[in-house]
Amino acid sequence: MSTQPTPNEANPFAAVEQSLSALLDASTTVTGVASAGAVRSTLFVAIHEDEVTEPRSAVAQISAATATFEKTMTIEDEAALIRLAEKAGLPVAEVLAVSAAAPEIDAPVLVCAAVDGETIPRRVLRMIDGHAGSGEALARECGRALALLHSIDPTDVPARVERLDAANPALAYADSLNDWLEQLPSPRPALRFGINWLRTHAPTPPPQTALIHADFRNGNLIVGPPSGSGTTGWLRAVVDWEVAHVGDPMEDLAYLCLRTWRFGSDAPVGGFGPLAALRDSYESHGGVWRQDAFDWWTIARTAWWGLGLAGQADAFVRGDSSSIVHAASGRRVVELEYDMLNLIGDHHGF
Amino acid sequence: MIDEPNAEQLLTAMAQTLADTVVPACTGAPQHAARVVANLCRILARESAAGAHHQEATVADLQALLGSSVADLPALIAQLDASLADGDGVPDEQTFRTLHANAARRLDIAKPGYA
Image (cartoon, rainbow over all chains, first blue to last red; front, top):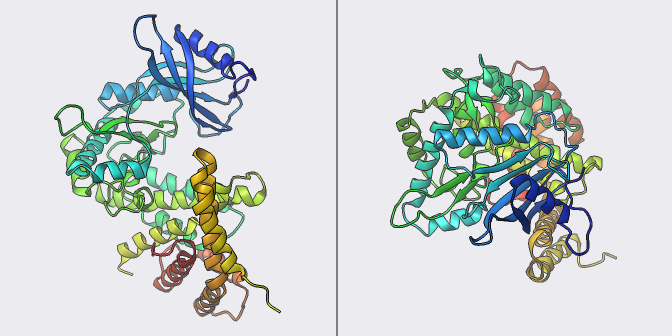
């Protein structure tokens, strides 16, 4: 019942390796630790399918069996969404195995094929800087990927996955932000100003809601140069599907363009590409661009991350977290407040 | 007697030591933590030097906006927040300008060059 391997001086990953070997029906060894958290650990593994071929590289995500966050989807639903996205034509890391209670460790496990490439945002930006035209190409590939994702029939999405109110997902979202704001122990008038604005300026509802990734940004994209002499294929995989849900498709496009995910670069799309390339590609692959909703979701998701950072700081102040990163988040809230105010000011000509 | 180095000088030196000595000697999570702490030291150095001045300016702005003579910044912030909670949600330009100026001052400490 633990995400951590059973202590074993000879091999601390013995239990996990036994579990993965049983799950994959092939001898599996842990080759490295990508991250080890209280809620989820991510391990690099090698799957030895036979004695002749090279072992297959994969990534295993092992969740805490006791993790019960209200809006966190089950690992089986996450795997189902990745497979839906793959079927729709998105580049994803192929799901190799999934279990809600893997043998030996009795914990949720998701094993996906390893995808070579870069995910660390500033390294992605350096890579793009070194290849003329690659930023626009990557923005176009993001537009295509999102159009394909949003074309998935929402009735194919597992029933337990969260669905925002189809009649007006924006208002439902603004109300959820307001509920979150009310839970913060200290007043945040800038965020309240922004959330008031969101509640009184909701955009036109989408013609229909769609499956959205909701964390589609520089950092959750595996990026690398195209193979051979091609100029497309920078986007190798879209990862981290755990907050995907059914909502307004423009949320994904706006989120990709938040200033906070540009990592100091001026390029509007993820810090790497022009907005026109994203929009043109999205529309040419069947997506419907709604500018008022794009603007609204840009402000909404900026406010959301401001609340998220404030929540991390609050957890530190309360003593629920000793993380220095969470402590530092308290001094980052103002970045999001400033971005959000500028977006509202631009809208009104203030 | 005033002891030296003062807080700003010490915090700047702490940040420099972390960046020059500790960060290069670490990898992975410890290196990231050292970078975060170094950045926090720089923030606190700037706050030590300019924080009181910025707070005075924000108190004056909030007093003007709210028509208040209260000098306590947390009380003024709570008063503004309460008035926004009771308002009609229509954005008011003077409130916007007060919040924007406050954010710019806080960024001057937390992340110079961002605003």
